[in-house]
Image 1 (cartoon, rainbow, N blue to C red):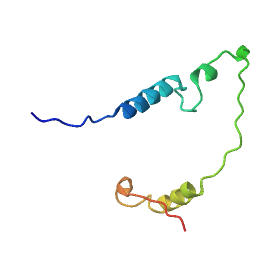
Image 2: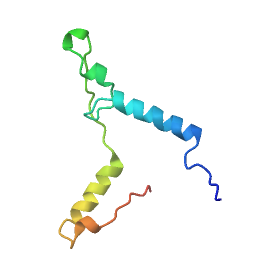
Image 3: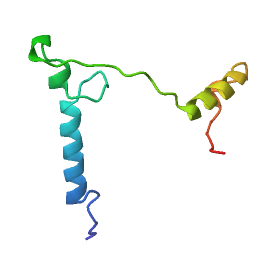
Length: 85
């Protein structure tokens, strides 16, 4: 008889249960807010503001470099990484 350790510990299962519950309560659009707030009728008092964006300088550098390779053979096969100077 072979006895194996369980793949998931009790703590692992608890974390995954909590994650599933969080995802079920989250707005499906991906904004990260609770669906009960984002889908509430406007008379419920919820209002939202969108602050000005901030720029990810790492993603900007990546986009600039990727543009240089757009005409390369199979550019979708290129693997990219961003390094900090």
